[in-house]
Amino acid sequence: MYLPPSFREPRTEVMHDLIEAHPLGVVVTSSAGGLFATHMPWVLDRTVGPLGTLRGHIARSNPHHRLDTGTAGRVVPTWNYVAVHAYGTVRFVDEAEYVLRNVEALTRRHEAGRERPWSIQDAPVEYLAGLAKAVIGLEVPIARLEGKWKLSQNREARDAEGVASGLAASADAREREVARLVAERLAARRDRGAGDHTGPERT
Image (cartoon, rainbow, N blue to C red; front, top):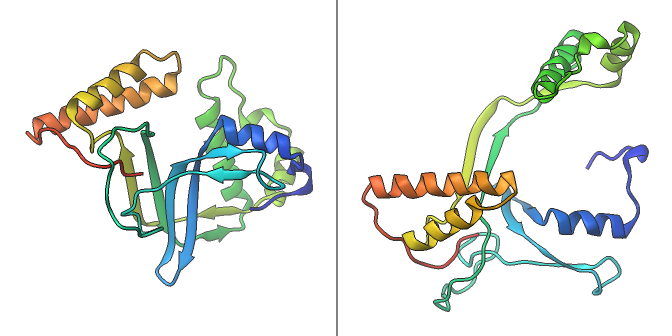
């Protein structure tokens, strides 16, 4: 990770707080076949080891760790989430105009919802010139996309309905969005006449 000294957070307890607040992480490994990643939630035990210990689980069929398959036949809590991995070759662009164009696009995207959105034109010209020298542009032409929509497709329809109903009642807008996605996939399953899905959880 690129980590300038001014951005470094050395306090273990602060990092632990962030992990517990946002426990969904990504396991990434490298082999002759390239990088391989698994999204999974973690449980942090602060008391084990000098920096704590993370504990989690992955599907037995996951290539990250092959074990004998099997299930206890019980329904256990699991996470629903969506994720996209984009693959490609990074190309660096060392042009001030390119950099500022991208900064402007990024600003428009994230300031659009504000009552008084900030614009790159609000910044002094000398500041923008310094910014263009301090950063370098990059782009990744996408050669391959992998999308994972883990939305209770492997559960019985009644279980998926329960998930959607429970999350839809949440005060958290993110959970309500997951509810919408679960319901959307459930409706698509019914349109296809796929019936109920049962089986072990796949992380």
